Length: 412
Ligand SMILES: Cc1cc2nc3c(=O)[nH]c(=O)nc-3n(C[C@H](O)[C@H](O)[C@H](O)COP(=O)(O)OP(=O)(O)OC[C@H]3O[C@@H](n4cnc5c(N)ncnc54)[C@H](O)[C@@H]3O)c2cc1C
Picture (cartoon, rainbow, N blue to C red):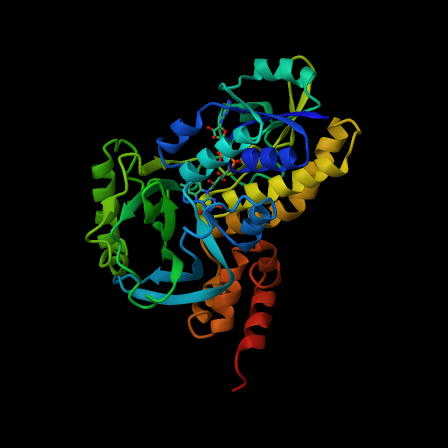
């Protein structure tokens, strides 16, 4: 049976590992942390996943927490007005629910399952030199190590990378005690609060080590007032700053957050990174080649909450490419074709995410505003988070946006 090494035990690495294992491949998973270290470590993401990505997990019967995790049935958008009121406020309904399962819970659980099913787990932080050796002993080496140092093996694709610097400063806090949204307490939703020129606050329910919780996630324009978490090491200071900024910029969300407490001492995260697309084949000093997976090759800013979704889609696509290739060699041509197949989906995520990082043009402001009066617009926008390719039809070009709005506006 074919031997495959996967470096990195995140969404993409574990999903492919478990998928290949179920097809009878001999899979080795290399992780720089044990399952227990992941479970008790720092939060890594907000990991809100929409229907298509969740469906890939269900197909592999990996939806272990589906009945415990809150079902996110809507996606709401508010735009802050200069007087701290809301210039825009609506919620779109998702056709299929979304869910966020803390990656600490999911990755630790999946890693243990992989080992229980006979998979080999090697706890080791792989270096480029290790991969040189392994590329000769395995039929295929997949690098699914996220945004860590191993990306240096993969050349930046300048033609597909719009930015060379971080576009947002990120600050996450997992909390218990957030009150329901007063407007729609009857169903769970992701809340996207846009503060023009300043940044965004995302709030979403999640399932973590201590049960149901909510995530407060600030994305701040670098150098602006939300870019304030850099030297903050103390978790309670991080939460206090999160709340202070909420009171100042999004008081309607602060109003329901006055009693929150951190889920745990590792429930905060801050950082920043430049959105980057890389060439899919990593070259090793000894001449071998490895294939990059998910964030290694396409890392988007989390403003559109797409990274885990994309990791699941990349894993599903690569799994099909590997299985369909049978016993033929996994050469560089195959690696490029596997990536191209994934890029068919990923390119839409990159285009839309990069657009959301910029100053919105007038037709996009009109679209977001119109969603407040026209429920079909709100619903379509919300469902675009599941299938970003649909934004091609009504988001980027003013003519298409206007034609779409005209088609849904009731006749005068
Ligand atoms: C603040 C924030 C919020 C986010 N919110 C969302 C969201 O709401 N929705 C969404 O879809 N996405 C979101 N994302 C993005 C999402 O978390 C990532 O895109 C996704 O986890 C990428 O999966 P991956 O498998 O490529 O890599 P990762 O999940 O990063 O996994 C990589 C793994 O490899 C390990 N590793 C690294 N180097 C080595 C090495 N040398 N040897 C061995 N192991 C190694 C790491 O420890 C890690 O376990 C968010 C990201 C951030 C930072």
